[in-house]
Length: 220
Length: 233
Image 1 (tube, each protein chain N blue to C red):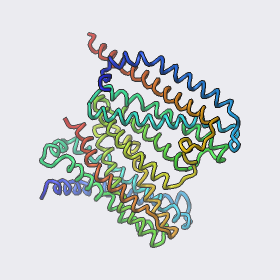
Image 2: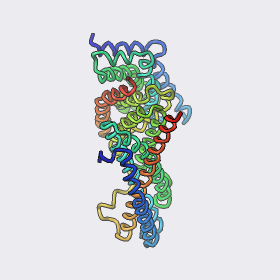
Image 3: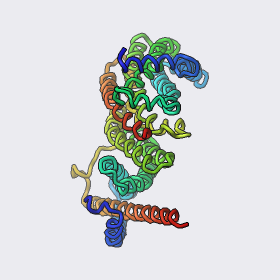
Image 4: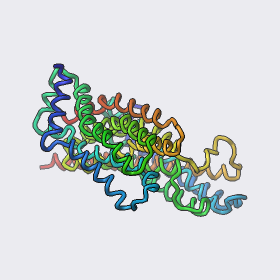
């Protein structure tokens, strides 16, 4: 097995075992999505109108839950030093961890989203768009989040600062993601999914380099 | 430019420049206010057009301040110069202040013009996000105790933000727009309004430079005082 896939497999195993963030994020996502109708009432027409935005915001917040631990555990127990010293470039190490984070949070959220879409009264085409937009967009959440996680590594209150750093940066993903669902709901097609894909690709491509630079700050 | 990156050199040079910058800022703002308040009421907006003279320059200063932080961050990452760190850190609260000023005056202008203080419109929203970017940047600076580490982390964040701001702006514009388009360059603005506006824009930028230089000088002095305290038995 290559070092990259070893690291990826290790992080995935850690995420599903006790204390891992995968189940937590999924539960949080489902819970927020279930609380919203309790807050704004059971009117399915209204719920369908706001579903795209709410599910997108819930997905971003759910991914945030486990982001502050993305590098922190490895930093505290010294594994990050080993990863940095290994023949694997730190950029690829960061990419493996980002991929593992997406596979353990973004992907499960995406897979659950059609069910929540049905519960929010979305028609079939809009559910399809919701699914696609989360599939395309959630990698950007993990990628941009990794930048924030690398910069706030070694901070005691890192988990509090992280959202302030990355949520404004992620606003395009929310806008395009929720926008694509809204236009699909109106039976229109828009370039939102394409724009979301562009944002997501750029973020996923660049963030391992930035995150590695951030990690190097904390490694001596 | 790097010649002046030496804190001592910067200190003496900025000391010489400061009185001129401050006087220039005061003159321009005074001139702009005089011209602005004696300008006739706009045929559509009435007297509320005078809000433009304090709103537009603040918005421009807020954007330029982020540009200043981004440029200083490049110098900080590439040249590893402490003066660049100080310059970036001290510009942030000023930028946040001008952003807040732009938002507040915009809200006060929006009430008589659009009939609402707040509108989820493209420019308003992207400016609100800019304010959050400033706050996050300042929070990161304050959170990391080790000063060099904080400087590098903040510089990385500032550059990521600089790359993201155009995308945020584009996405928010795509989302919706109500705010009027840009009208200074396209010559749609009457000279009687343009003159005070330009004076105010210049005045605000000079004011920003003045305050920025004072803040950098204070930070340099602070650092000197701290090292003297540590050196003392």
